[in-house]
Amino acid sequence: MSITIRQVSKHFGSFHALNNISLEIESGELVALLGPSGCGKTTLLRIIAGLESADQGVITFSGEDITHIDVRKRNVGFVFQHYALFRHMTVFENVAFGMRVKPKKIRAPEATIKQKVHELLELVQLDWLADRYPWQLSGGQRQRIALARALAVEPKVLLLDEPFGALDAKVRKELRRWLRRLHDELHVTSIFVTHDQEEALEVADRVVLMNGGVIEQVGSPQSVWEHPASPFVYGFLGDVNQFEAEARRGEVAFEGVTISSPEHADIALAKARAYVRPYDFEVIRYSPQISGIPVRLDRAIVFGPIARLELNIIRSESASEGRALDVQMPSEQFASLDIKAGDQLVLRPTRAKVFIEGQRLTR
Image (cartoon, rainbow, N blue to C red; front, side):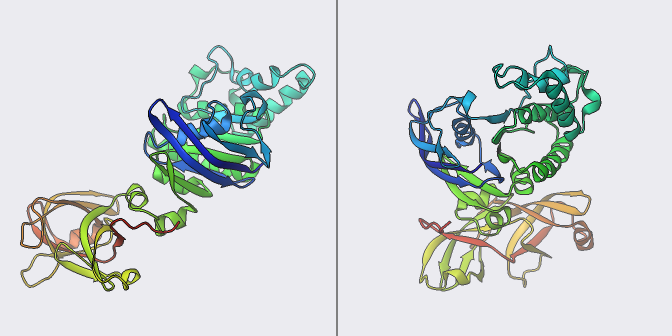
């Protein structure tokens, strides 16, 4: 089931939740709507489901206009963040509910319903919990039951709204891997909303970055990470250090250092912003003879193979005072530097993403 979203807008009073959104989702695709709170991703999901109506625009399922079709006739499965299971029903009864409330003329026989429920519980690897109640399950188990219930009605489209948001980090990681494997088995066209960058990049076939009611970029996880279309995308996908800069003839200068920026070779001179990931710095013990960004180490956090350094730029003619920077490096390399809080260091950026002010890259 393919989905086409064409020029969809939505207001809540004076708040513009969605502004002329257009998007194509292919049949069998798993797409993540990613962005900060209030960016419009849940509103868009609810409009696709039929739980909200758009002020303008068209939604089609495989070419059929369903914009004004009631939610009950769209045949979508919906999984919420907080499970929405019926507490007074067993796991079995929760999964069977959608099939049992269908009109009598299209309702399957009870024996068929029972068989289907057991198959779904086996699919989510929880058939041994059929007689339990939701309050007897862990959060991860409840979410898997909620997914089984959504799949029970054989939806054309599966919609998930922050499905793992209420779970702890370890369970979230386990469940998103499990969701990816499950999707590869079923190939149901699926859209899930998340504000977790790692979750979107790990699970989705394509990521839709949203901000302020518009789509900033659409692409594969690798493409949006490696080729961000805007400063927002670069800053939202992981930690980043931001610098005011000047671009000139294929180079960019900031905080007293100059690095190559060949994509801007045709720019004579322009204000820019340079974005440097925490792991894109060379860290050197301080010496007046060494060029780079002079910094002071405020704190080092070492866990496993990574050392995270909290640094402050040291006042100089070419650098601002008290500017905080985050840098990451292998813990073995950190140990070999033999440094402690208060020590002076020099940073050399090895790579930066540069955006000319007022200029936007083509998606």
